[in-house]
Image (tube, rainbow, N blue to C red; front, side, top):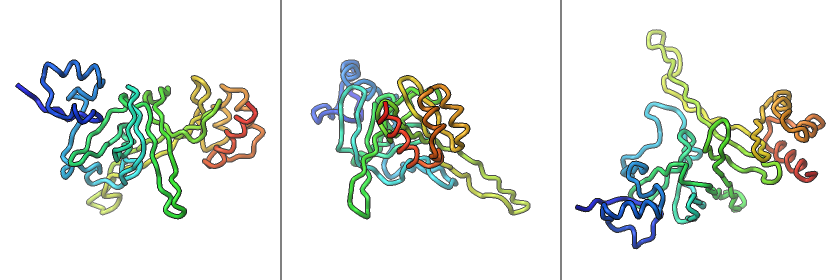
Length: 238
């Protein structure tokens, strides 16, 4: 008896039907992509990433993105459109008539290519999977890479509707709020950056150099452009 598997990122010769007895061999070669329980496949017309009755989206961007996906098995792919789901830290990859959700443990990194509508320049936004103490396996955007690496994480908060039908007050819909969190990585240290400089100095006590530089700096830790310049400065003196 034969079963049909939808297997993402295989060569065209392996996109045909696979015998049950061949699944073990395919699994060894293509990691968890050959396991049915690790693939959530949705019919394109039936899939809706929005939460019904909610304002906002758990996706980094609602548009389909071009870019590159690097798998943990060393394979690289550039032919698929995808979107990053912040809520469950996964990639939603678009096929012809299907959408496949790829678990984060199968992906080592990905790059989103944003086209600047004004000057036509493609901005590349690299994301890597890190084992942070806060969220193991989280994808973080790499803003500055070097001895000290500046990382940007994303999170979502769900706020339930507080509508009171008797008084006709409050918010009718649930709300999805996106949050941004910055880290400085040096080796195995992930130091969180707070909007408040005093709280960031407290976090940076674990690294004397960072703490000294920030203490003598006039940057605003609430501004991304200031953080980027700050880490470039620290790295230039490394």
